[in-house]
Image 1: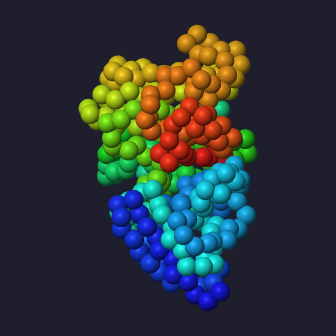
Image 2: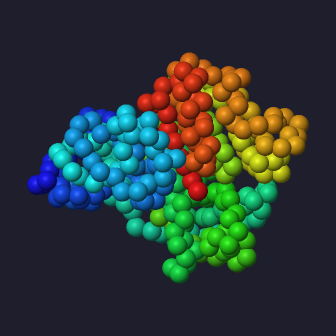
Image 3: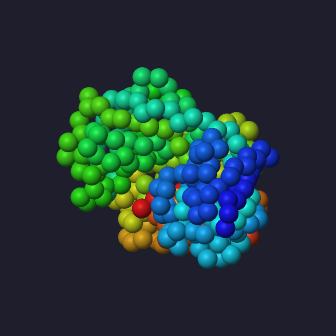
Length: 331
Ligand code: FES
């Protein structure tokens, strides 16, 4: 093919068109157009960059089919980070142009204030920042304890605008960040922070919402619950929480505080084995069968890719609108 025109179209109706060389990655085309598309892994493994191909054609490099099932691809969904231009195309994003126009702020330094285990495989990390960090509830930052270690992405569990950020980290045996956190991190240490990033954030709307969390995927929902405004609180909020066992559950105090302040909040906990009191045995997707499922609820799912895919299918089977679901996958 000769060069093609690629139009990036956003939810607020703003569009930007740029010339693409044959086989050029759409993410590179967008950068040249001055757009910073929302992305995380940049290698087809998280699904953050999903968009809709409205017209034209792209070719995609290898990606994880768990984050883009064939049925979605058949419906026109693409992963922008691995999509290459092969014809003039229009690609539509579910977020406003302002999200893609903001310059990425340079990394800044934070100070560790607390780090300790809170549940099986889960540690908390709290850091203090010099200036309050504005972000959308549900977004994440990248953290790097030192230049020799890789950046790792974690969602804030606190409300936006605070000078104290809190994270829940799933400990991965042998993982670089996990090893630092468990073996070396101490209050007073410094850590680099970059962001915020991500399209998985609470939509500001007075309509029912259903959160589905797997493991440490509960963190962004804690931020969302703390940030719900008065109008949003009036609408029903339901959260299905999944964990491997009762010992893997965390943030009980924060969830209790949320039930005190959010009148229409329903929390159901599911564990895979030996359910303690107040928990059910099974996966969080079991909640779709027994509810409550509010008609018209917007669905937010955060967890490992297989759980996210199972929740997506369960939500569709329950009659919820596929176009209005938001997903955050982590590995
Ligand atoms: Fe494209 Fe992760 S940024 S799949």
